[in-house]
Image: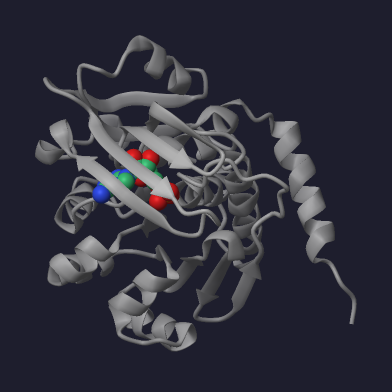
Length: 302
Ligand code: AMP
């Protein structure tokens, strides 16, 4: 089935205890699309500047990612720079240069308007809503990511956008901030009243928790000996999750649980290199092998 993502395509400068890169392809939509493309074709709606070259484009084109929805604007692409703490659990944003992203008004090419699976990456909630309004019919699954900036800055627009969302994918701090509830299960109940019936809480090195109104499911992060750069892990998780769901086309408890595992598996490849390198190059057989190891890692009998 068709999967659409809207969000940032960026260049990132990243510093972690294990190294540093000055400028590498990044952005939430890039990580999401590359992750999802291991399961299903993907359509991207984003904006890039004149610094986005054919070489950057080739990273997507090599992987069943359609770029008809990527607008080329005059100016520079979105640029983000961040530094991680020694234990990599905290990240300080050093620079956010919106550049062409500041005038981004997502416009869906006509043939994108029938997408059955839609992921609204972390952008202005009014724009997220405008994407759903451009669809010819309601998507089978609409998922949304957001951040503290929008939760505190434009709460009403965010609540309006959430009304038509099936799955909200945010981290634990954002869950608490959005609902004012410290307890995540109570927070999930508050979120169910806003629209989504499924909440996926991304918890970094602690994995992810899914709270559905009928069941709860938890996955760990895949244990790795070396994490080089956590950037994009959350977006890759979302891409693996939605890519898998879109490839099976059916939504039920079993497929949602598997989607959580594939999200975690794909995210674990992203953090093994700086930028999108490992994620873009990982083989389907490596994903399958890690998913099997995941199953062993979490299996037990009572
Ligand atoms: P993650 O580590 O999953 O939170 O994703 C990090 C990616 O998000 C980086 O590649 C950044 O380019 C991108 N990013 C950072 N800040 C923003 C923002 N305010 N809006 C959209 N994308 C962002």
